[in-house]
Length: 204
Image (tube, rainbow, N blue to C red; front, top):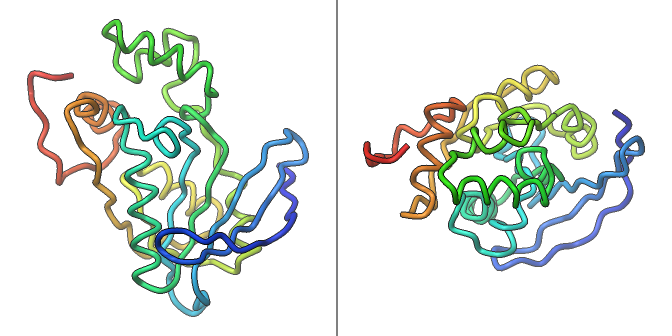
């Protein structure tokens, strides 16, 4: 994968002013963003998150997932600490794209869970790749992290790219009646670590 750094600008948010660093994958044309906050202390493990794009959750306030809640909480945690980063990757719908995600939602409305819906459309449960994170982190001088995630695949991806994960910081927010079954499926079928959640056993 060929990741090219493009430019950096300021991004004022409700939690403070982040720096927004733009990257282009010259092979696929996909555009990714790294957000940084404060002066990153490269001698310590930096609090951060890998966040895959979720238009419905991040921008349209969907309650079907926990993505928007996780993004906002990660930004708030970083701002309160005074430093940190977020890699915002353009991998909508766990890598299947927005329109296929809507098709998957249609199948979920008919009774499939999030894994079954992707598989019925001919995709793997999770199609995301993480090989773009190494050059993005190199650009912002991050080599050791405290990673905000419930997903062990993201921890493994960091480690495979030579990034030391000093700590996994749970990010269990946004559970509601619309996404409880979705979150339980992520826990039971995708291995997400959600020990702080209590699920209704009647839901799948």
